[in-house]
Image (cartoon, rainbow, N blue to C red; front, top):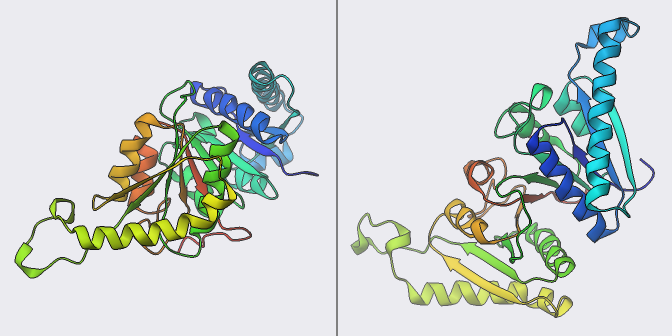
Amino acid sequence: MRTPAIVVAVDGTDSSRAAVRWAAREAELSNQPLLLVHVMDWDWAAARYDFGSEHFETARKSADGIAARAATEATTVAPAIDVSTDVAIGDPSAQLIIASEGAHLLVLGNRGRGGFAGLHLGSVSQRVAMHAACPIVVVRGRTTPLQGPIAVGIDDTDGADEVLEAAFTAARARGTSLSVIRSFVPVLMSYWGHLPPAQVHTPEQDDAERARLTAQLAPWREKYPDVPVEILLSHDSAAALLVGVSHGTQLVVVGSRGHGVIAGTLLGSTGLQLLHHAECPVLIVRPHGKRDSGR
């Protein structure tokens, strides 16, 4: 891949078609080429030693057709973008990880068939999430674009700046506002007993946390003065907040891993709930040049 591209996994399903349409619009917004990848989940031994078989040729023609139809769909949505296709052979998760090398973004549908089965929550999506070398978008929820804000969930770790950069960039490109969401657990006094944090009123702690978040956002507001920003602070779980706001947003942006309340956003329970229940596409930002080890 000579230049970074937006790579989208295609398999001909409705979910895949939604991913192609989303990726085409994103390619148009970001002026990036689009690469459509279809993976033939073919037995490696058969693919290696039996390329000339009639069965393989039939499967290959079908795969080429799936990729070609995806390209037509993409150019229908965004006629001016640069679109190319690739048909890979082998394990889908491994091939998608390879395709992510040097990519600007990897886009997946939330469901699939054949080799992409389980993209909703199965082994393919989890392995790709842990090992892909670029940011990932899982396209799920509503199938038509919504003219709403971008939502971003952040903590106060070092990786938050990369998440904020992606979120502010997405909001500016779409000409919309940004909802910045932080969930934090206040220090609870013993006399509150076993009340859950979400039901406890702690105005002083809330004010202090809001001040910290406001200071964290200050340089980004200066860099992106044209992006209106709203802060949402809550004692509720990060998963509940992000799923809730996804009903009225274009995109939810989170980090791939953290060390605060958003810790494990993709690989932990918060991210898994988000991928199950979000009503809009979800962007998982991976730190530049890093992969999660999965350990």
